Amino acid sequence: MKGKLKFILPLLVIVSLISWLVFAGVKDSMVYYITVDELLEDVPDIYGQKVRVSGTVVHGSIKNELDDSLRFTIADGNGKIDIEYDGIIPDIFTDGVEAVVEGKLSADNVFVADLLLAKCPTKYESDEAPYQRKEG
Image 1 (cartoon, rainbow, N blue to C red):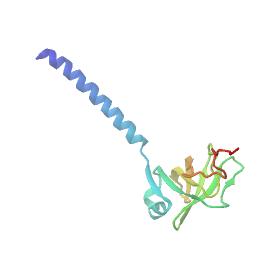
Image 2 (tube, helix red, strand yellow):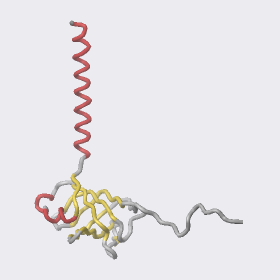
Image 3 (tube, helix red, strand yellow):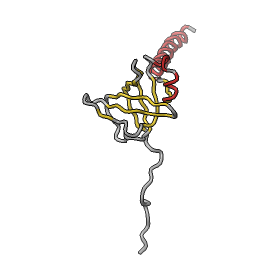
Image 4 (cartoon, rainbow, N blue to C red):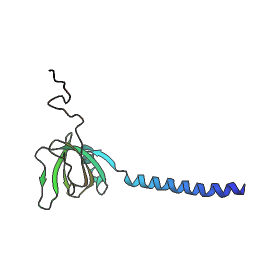
């Protein structure tokens, strides 16, 4: 019995420690995901919280500032929010693309993002079929 206890007790400690580390890591990486409309509805509750917001980039709103930051507006439904971002800009980021930003809402209602993702179109179309047999 004592031999089994010497084996089971350290095993339980190791399994508990690994479980706690996994839970703590997942909890810290989870970010609440909302739409622009939801963000605007919950403005007082959102200040200071890190959130992820999705919306479509408004045409003509993208502006590169002198301090190398990017300012643009995203919209979803009836709501619009100004975004300020300083970081790497995805190649496919342009007007009309669906963007996901992660960051915090500032006191002047500008969303300060520390992550910018541009969603790829789900359907790519070609002018020509890529594999056509030529008769001849």
